[in-house]
Image (cartoon, rainbow, N blue to C red; front, side):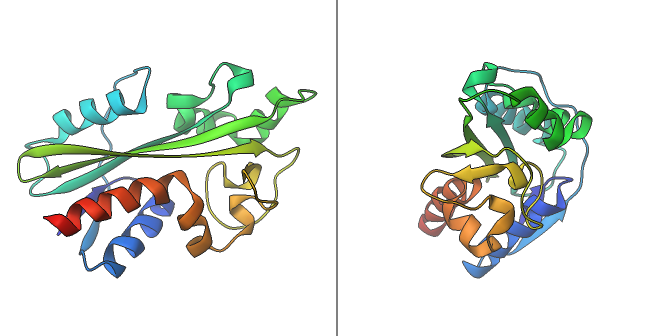
Length: 182
């Protein structure tokens, strides 16, 4: 049993479906805990794993993800969750108003605590930010992010397709390969 420590039901749905299809039992553990403010997702995940070790029984998984926009100096980056809660996708679109460079990258870092050791799995996907929100699916910034080579936002494509393209899907693929070898 892997406990996915998250309060984000959208993340849990995506991750648990993939884990269970690969034969790994997954349970959501909605624990709020303070995250250290760092410059990288990896630092946030390492710190969070240390904080949760000993407080969460058995094996657990955590995730930190972010939307990095170079023309905004990498913003919102590691602060993506906070920025989404405060200004949302509309606020990000407003910040980019009138800007030609709309390149962006979604990044994900999973931390797996397995039998008293910690492993990290990283995934990223390049794309662009739309001019307006599109689509009803997904969660978070999905309605404003189009992966490179695509024409639809993550919110406009089915979850299964999104999981094959997304930063989280790429990190999860690495995690699953690791788990299959254990």
